[in-house]
Amino acid sequence: MTLTMFGGLTMILIYIFIGRTLRPLNRLADALEEIGDGHYRTRVSGRLTPELSRLRDSFNRMAARLAETDAENRRLNEQLLSLQEEERGELARDLHDEMGPYLFAIGVDAMTASRLLNEIRGSEAAEHIQSITEAVRHMQQRVRHMLGRLRPVGLAEFGLREAIDNLVAFWRRRRPEICIQAAISPECEELGDLASTTICRVVQEALSNAVRHAEPKLVTISIDRNGDEIRVAVADDGRGMREPGRLGYGLTGVSERVRAVGGQLRFSNKLGEGFVVIAVLPHLRVQDPLSTATAEATGT
Image 1: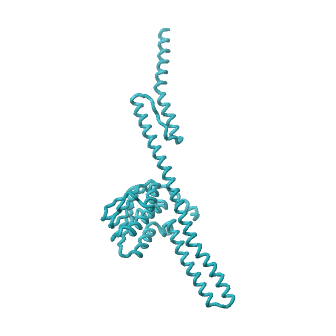
Image 2 (image 1 turned 90 degrees about the horizontal axis):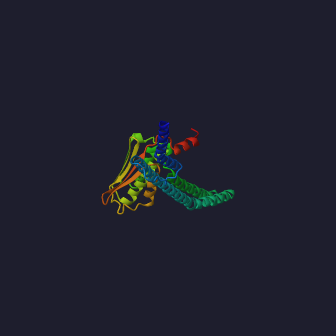
Image 3 (image 1 turned 180 degrees about the vertical axis):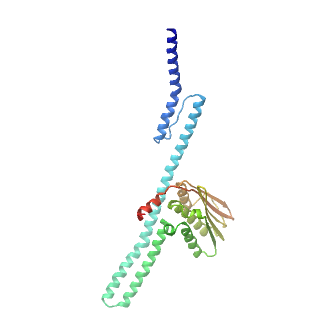
């Protein structure tokens, strides 16, 4: 009888002890569920055994990092939306200011040419037809410029190398006194639309800034891949940036684009000796959204 009572009492004590021991683990399990639901401000508090205290501290550090990452992602999304709206606004202004007057002029010239042809005044009508041709040529140039802002010229048709060559050729024609050199690793020629477009934007903005503001003699562009990382560097030997901490709209926008795909954008500046823009991007093995959209649009 005594032995039975002792055994029962022992079982009760073990149950109570185990229950008290597992209670903090239940709190941790509940906290993990809240983290899984997106509540990253969840924390575990209270006195625990040394072993469980380490687990609690690790959990709280993880939750804090997740909260910071979530806040950063929200900030990036807001900035990307702002950049998109600004780009759309600029395109809308270009369409209104550039295309509107020429479309109106084409309409007027077409009506006048039609009237003159009906009146058998062909020589006068030819002048208005020539005006229409010139207006259309100008509009084609403007449309090509806008498309280049939306998507680098040559990227979809021929790939990254052709798009970079187009950017280099654009500035070589306008600034022949500047030596511009580009080296692209063969491993970087088929990276997918998202990575390729991001690389083109980095090169486009860095090259444009160097040529327009740095007064360089030499600009070098290098794009290579090391394992799962893609490194893009645009360096010039110009005068450098007087206030490297104050980036313009273009470099700020490129920085946000790079960070949005999980990369990093860095700058190296020596006043009077040059400026370097370095982007490090992850090489995503999965099919990116731009490639998927292109394939769906073309039916491939």
